[in-house]
Image (cartoon, rainbow, N blue to C red):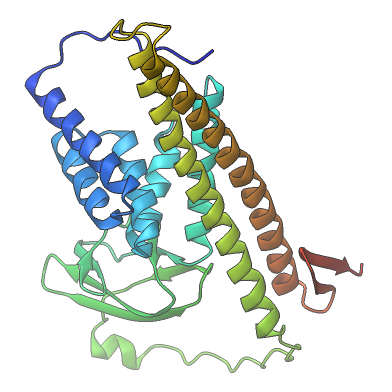
Length: 308
């Protein structure tokens, strides 16, 4: 049996406009017009902010490689999503967490401590808040704090993907104070250690991101197939067709096919998420313990060997 849509109360003009935008966004997504779907969801979130809209923005920004925006949106999405109460919510919950894990593999996060009296905090010219992590793409970034009295503090930070860096800023002290500052004692350099193989890291990280992205995409496709199933079931139950008619049988078969597609998409999507998470964990183990971990590529995955 297929789920039936419940009758809803008459919507307000704002709710109707929002629903029309959502319907148009879903059609754009089915046509793979990701930029258009993202634009429509942004309008939805402006008219009626919601966790669902933020989650959708995060998924589409990830597809558009807008990594900084996607990471911030998916972080908010995962924080605000309530605990799932049924299978559909649980699958959606898992997809959102997997999407956040995928984008975190490709960005770094900065935890910035601005000096007291800061009026504005900028990262590469865009204003940010110091209350939480600031997501940035790998590379060099300029951090600027502007004080209420015109003071300015700068810092240049170079980060790689998956880095988590704490940055503390301080306004320049008067020159007289700087002259009396003690000279720090030289620090002996730490002994060099063998660097992990970058080819193994790149291959492992790339394959992990690809599998996680494929898993997210398959779950999104499963959501679309499920909505298509619900729409067809509504037609079967609206009384417009005789149960013995050829049209009724055709719609029934199409609904059954859509339901089958939804199950297949979600099954393959879950398998891709599990494989991507396992490969990502193996790559992290190799990076953290380069002398005690060895990753050997295999035909359908990778073998991880740890020496303790």
